Amino acid sequence: MSNELSHLDAQGRAHMVDVGEKPVPRRECVARGEVRMAPETLARIADGRMPKGDVLATARLAGIQAAKRTDEWIPLCHSLPLDAIEIDLVPDFEGSRIAIRARALAHWRTGVEMEALVAVSAAGLTVYDMCKAVDRGMTLGEVQLVSKSGGKSGKWERSPADAPER
View 1 (cartoon, rainbow, N blue to C red):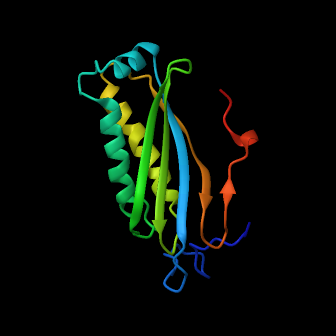
View 2 (tube, rainbow, N blue to C red):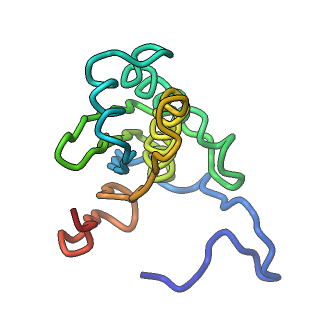
């Protein structure tokens, strides 16, 4: 791994990296996160008994929308044409949480790590927003990159040893 920070110029000022001459390979990234909550809150989500409506469908759409607008969230992030964004929200009754997974795909000059991470974050924040009247103690966490492929740095996968304990 390089110790160079590509988003800093020679004077140490933040700048957007020029990717104009880079090749356009297929890029794929997977990210995950979770929203922990009271068991009753999770049961209400799963049973469709939340006052604001279908929490999982709305969170999925929010994640997709956010991924498409990542460059508006992250100041030095490039705009890029996503080929696809897939988001899974899975109720985990044993862990009293909703597990969130996002997969971003693009053929572009820069990676899609931020798009996958933003999708997970926005989906989790939407779950919180839709359920906060019932459970203000929810926590959004463990947002992390799981894997990436494509580009100069090649393939990377999080080691199972790096996974959060359950």
